[in-house]
Length: 229
Image (tube, rainbow, N blue to C red):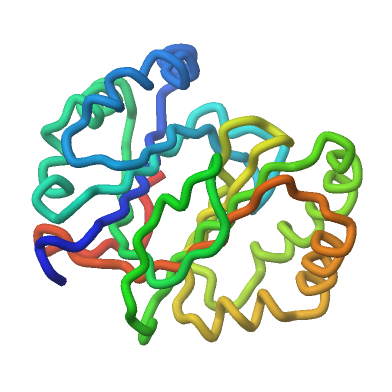
């Protein structure tokens, strides 16, 4: 990994009950400090779902911070940044996945946040799928997608998954971590999930969507396999 290559991180912060209102308020209050973080070209602070994949059930104790770093040097200073310390002082535990993007299509609020590195996945792979729903398709989404999301919980080769998002029902995303690309594609192309994808395209559920694949990278000599949250 070159020191000049873009690094992506996603951190899950888990809060004790007494600090959950504080954590909720950070969805607005933390935006200004996050904008001042050196070396970050894109970030999203999001709530999380209590179920698997797209979920309306909130996980009020866990929040996710996605950050795209210009290079390794900035990423290595993450734990010394105000962005990290602000949350670390209040949370019970946190865990960060470090990764590099190897495939991405679509946009996030009109932007393509990730720089693609031309490299094949030969081991574990991470995926972020994000969608902004059309208002008139929300009910259709709620009746069709949860079953597919629940199926992911039993998918072979799935190490970890968490629903993330900025707004319940309207703007939702999932982060998933798989043992291999083959495991991920086996789930993605199985009949139930494939049928949902067909309906999404045919009925135009999404106003905007993004799909990105990543490979995990070692940062400061550490590669993480499982979250602490």
